[in-house]
Amino acid sequence: MTYDYDTIIIGAGVGGLTAASLLAKEGLKVLVLERLDRVGGCCSNYDVNGFKPEVGAVFVIGHELYYKLFELLNLRLEDYLQWDLIDPVYQVYFEDGSDVALPRDVDEMAKVVKQMAPQDVDGYYRYCRDMGKIQNLLTAVTANPMPGIRDITRLSKLAKLVMTKELIPAIPVNLKMGLNNLENLVKRYFSHPYVQLIFGWENLYAGLPAHRCMGLFAMITYMGHMGYYYPKGGMISIPRALARIAQDFGAELRLQAEVDSIALQGREARGVRLSDGEVLNAKSVISNTHSRFTYFNLLKDADLPGWVRRTVRRQPCSIPAPMFYVGLSERLDSVKAHMSLVAQKRERVDNIWTDFYDRGLLYRARDGVYLVIDNTFDDPNMAPPGKQVLYTIYIAPYKLKYDNWDEIADEWAWECIDYLDERCFPGLRGRVEWMDSVPPTELERRLNVAEGAFFGIEMSLPNMGPFRPNYRSRLIDRLYQAGQSTNPGLGVPGAMISGMAVASLLLNDWPRTLA
Amino acid sequence: MKTSRHSFRIFAASKTVPFLLGVLLGAAWALRLDEEQQRRLKKNLFELREMPFRVFI
Image (cartoon, rainbow over all chains, first blue to last red; front, side, top):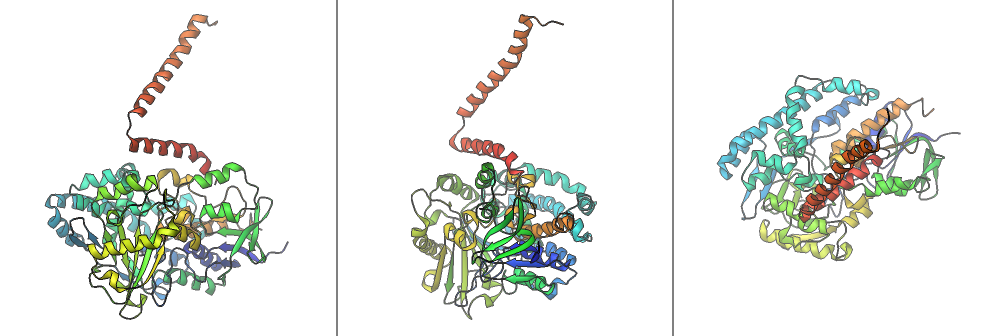
């Protein structure tokens, strides 16, 4: 049998393009297929009349990993990506109408905490000391030279990478954070409800209430001190850079090429069938889509046992991310940061889950928690000159008990806009030139993300380690899985790690399995 | 050595009684939980049941 490609990658998201660039560099003949007319998947930007809001990911965190990837590619990151430091990290709006900017500098932040709750300053420094131990470990690990691409999935090599003198002090902190939920952990450090909110709302990223979320998420706020970055040209610059690298190494990228299914020969993946009927043969297939989409849509022809699809269907997704975008005819000076958190106090963030989310109910706008992102704050080119684009994410269930998202999404978005106008951004409603409301059902249609959850599978212990979807499918030979759903909760770095791991596994299987 | 009927009964009771006692205590504890705690318990039991299958996906 002759093969058109060594590997075909379904989905030009960050995971797929990472794998494509690494594999193409190793000399494999790679084809990347993307259904949309742009790369990036959930790490991308729309473009509507010059307004370019983010699709999902909104900032770069853990930038050290990007350097490690470029180290593997033998390239300089600066030649492909430029980014700006986000400072202040957040602007937080509280229930009493007050708001506070969270500076990047630790001592400046301590002053903010002191103003709000002097009794929590000691707790803040204790928090920084503990988180700093983990940060030191991460810095030491990233300072070590990367093993070769074939070795990064070998446990002995990984252990060597982690074995630094910073590991020992980090172990008790890791245990404390891993064994405590976020709610308890934050209460150990802080007593004031507003300070607890500042350091304990990251459970939104995990798609879980704080009492079900691992304490490790408290690290995210601290990482703001190490730097959140925003790439010039928006988040889409990251997949665009990876696509350019992959193509420079010889990979082929086809946009607007929708894959109908994975072509099988027995229990082996042997290529893909496109929606227009074209069949492409390959020695292996990498599915960079949500695992639920892979098993239900791409493997619809596979004769899999019933328990497989049942298990995939039952694997819980993280928070659906209903969102709306507004393009403003004129800049709003009241938006003071790249990201604004509009909330009440930390308990309220949790109550949304218990009182509304778990019951399939939609609350009134005034009860909501909103993350408002202004990407023109760091890069004015993301909107037409003098204009602004805001992207708002909130918490709401995928399925509403009494309503239909497609019918109420616009009405609900306008209610939220009115509320945000009244609460923290006066003049917002009057300047809206363009609005796009994207409920979870619409996001699912646009990006094929199950339940509109762009954070992928729920980040909880029963979905991690051996319980998350495997990089190398255990049911279909020559099929690999990458992307957000294989590394729950880790965002863009998680997708990038999955791309590296899949490339490594595939190269190690080569030529033994794939010859 | 031959096991007498009496010693067998003692052996069986030593296993069954603590088991039944555990079931009763567990049920009593579960009945006392509020709605949110019951939801958490159900979620944990659900995850526990699903985890072995996930290893093969």
